[in-house]
Amino acid sequence: MIELPHMLMIGGTRSKVGKTELACRLIGMYGASHRVIGIKITTVHDETDECPRGGEGCGACTSFEGGFCFTEESMDPPGKDTSRMLAAGAERVLWLRALRPNLEEGISALLETIDYDAALICESVSLRHIVKPGLFLMVKEKGADEFKPSAEEVRDHVDMIIESDGKTFDIDPNDITLADGAWTLREAATAIVMAGGKSTRMGSDKCFLPIGRRPMIEHICNRLSPHFKQLLISANDIDRYSFLGFEVIPDKIPGYGPLMGIVSVIEASEHDLNAVIACDMPNIDAMFLKRLIRECKGYEGAVPVTKDSLLEPMCAVYSKSILETFREAVAAGEHKISEILKRCKIHYIEVSDDTSFRNINTRKDYENYITAGPPAKKEKENM
Image 1: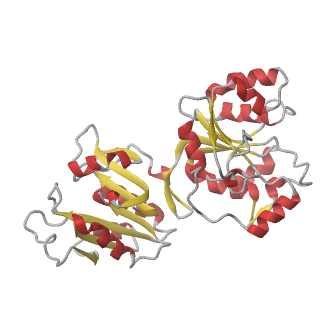
Image 2 (image 1 turned 180 degrees about the horizontal axis):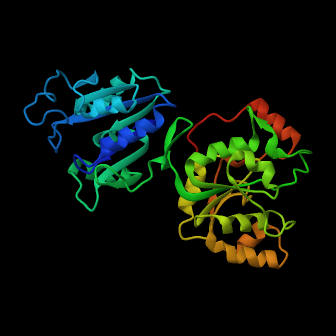
Image 3 (image 1 turned 90 degrees about the vertical axis):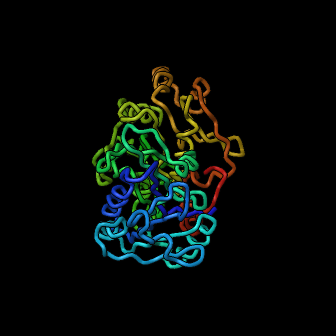
């Protein structure tokens, strides 16, 4: 399986359901700020026996020799799907035609002509057998449930099925985002960055330690905001954090510590599921938080546990259903979240690598982080 996180793959449950319209919409959104390359895949002689050009007898699908052929597309003629992609703002558009047994060979050859730092938007269904993209969307006609055979084959791999009337969609295209070179969907959840700590061991406010050219809290918000429909900051000094551009929620009753901060912000959240993250975790991995969101189904919270059996309640996902227990704990003067969680229905997630939620507590921790730099991207058990 070829893994291409920088590829957004769009398929259709059948022809003419609006997949090119969605592709063009996204090219238009990102073409001004990113290098976007469009790719059109035609699997020749598949079970649909459809032609993307002139219909039956046009010869476009039989005019090549060997197992595959790809061409650099132009604006002529203006009505075809690939010219629409160019008109929408794609830097280049490539059309791959391949016999089904030669599809992997064909896409491998095509990819050799593309710089890896370009964002790819690809129209295909059959390619999902060979390529694992950052995001795989399937467009279906509004109110219709029929899937052509090739779409049915990859249905279990779809990240989202989108209904369309050919022009409009039941998803906000802004929820399809490109972050750190990878395509992703914004979760219908809230990310909560906890900025209310006293930073006693650091000696200065950890939130504003520079990571690159930005304060740590801004670095963390930038990592998370493309992945969540809402991001909130938990802090009592609203003006101090207003530069971030996100709503700042103060504690309803100051002086009760992080528990009151969590209660106050979850109450203000627009969503049932809330990813709570401390402001001193510069390596926070949004994909790990998305895993916790999936693991929270049927629970009041999903909390990671390290190989040393340590809980990390400040990098966890909580449902609003946990508020009742948390409020009772506040009223009783309790502060230790790990003890309060024992009375809740929590899914504890064992992880062998705590890199993504390792925090910075001391000046030495910070110096070590700056010296070592962020960890290289790699496949990890907790992703």
